[in-house]
Length: 332
Ligand code: TRP
Image (cartoon, rainbow, N blue to C red):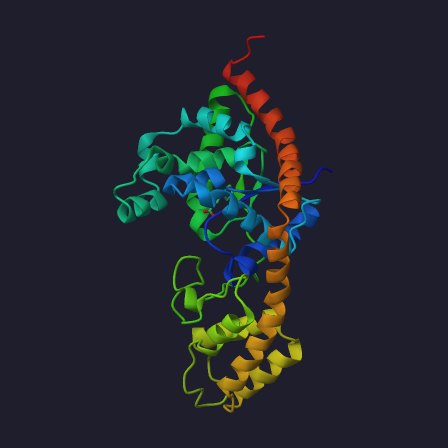
């Protein structure tokens, strides 16, 4: 049986951090074994905020290098830049004719962007979900691994697929959010304020590019308290989060040792954090160094992009050909 098709887009803005690693990349790495995966850098999407042209290539190459260094295998998945697949903007144009201004204006992420940047309400921002639908439907994907914040966009992609099928004939399967296994962890910010995020509070976020000293410093500053006062006390979220991190990067015995000290009320947060910092450095350093090395090797990254674009275009051109015919663009 042929493998199910998976598509996911990687934002090209911001540096990758532990939240991305444990939330998304680790799942991509699991999926690459069992699915037909198309993973791409969403560089067109990033144009909605007009990044400096000088930065674009660096951003794309960096996320590419960081994802490969984390374990994404360009031989197993199609790893490409969105802008290298012209069939995507073509399908985007077709879908735009089926997308209504009213429904686009109602999208919460759009409303949020309007609120934050009232001076840059461009049409690309309004039609962001249409481009995203094109990214997905161009490969007739059925599974899309994305976070909660993208569920509304996925619903719109389904609507556009159904609308296209209703008007022109059955063509697109309906894509659904792929729920990462239920044990996917949420990584919270080290200050205990919300989730670890690209843009907020850089001091409470550990990036895959952070130097050893910086990682240590951030962990040593992580929020704790005066400790539990009764045996087997419930942990506050910010302590739980440190244990989650330890579980991801330390030996199981280490984690259970510190869990015991917590349960017995004799946990010493200083020692706990020192151990976590040490193990975190051991975990991040090889990824960081490999990503830096890859970024130096532009020739290699260009080769990956080319190879990915070829795989992606093979699938994309079939879809576009079919869509053109159904729409009636069928002149020769
Ligand atoms: N909008 C997604 C995000 O902000 C990125 C993205 C773009 C995407 N196109 C996609 C994700 C297609 C999944 C499928 O994270």
